[in-house]
Length: 150
Figure 1 (cartoon, rainbow, N blue to C red):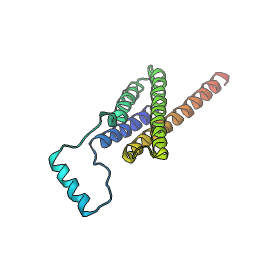
Figure 2 (cartoon, rainbow, N blue to C red; figure 1 turned 90 degrees about the vertical axis):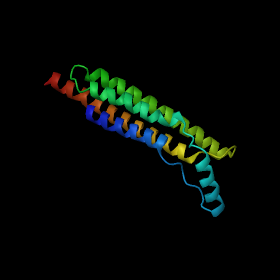
Figure 3 (cartoon, rainbow, N blue to C red; figure 1 turned 45 degrees about the horizontal axis):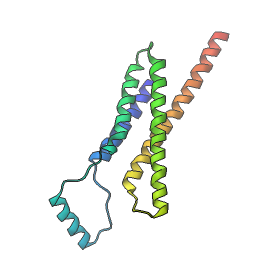
Figure 4 (cartoon, one colour; figure 1 turned 45 degrees about the vertical axis):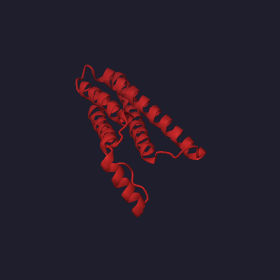
């Protein structure tokens, strides 16, 4: 699971960096909107929210856990810490995504679809990571039980 943790960490770091540095979502193209957008782009720097880096922060912590888990003596503790971080990442992503869905349904304001996409991707990656970790923990427990009985 240490290598799997590193892979998921790198995916989360990439997700955060794309969310922060990537292009903003396209809008409906009309000549007036294109001109207004190009004028605005020339006069202002793009607004970047540091919250877009949250998946990268989660990924960095998971990367450290994965690297520590390469040491056999520290593997169990590192992986348990990693699954807690993954669970928190899933809960944060799913919670923030649910709030975005409520905004979309309420039509109170225009939702940020790009932000919602990245939040749900983080929740998906973290949720999948937690599932893989739990399955690995169960398999390790069964293996230890079989070894002690055999």
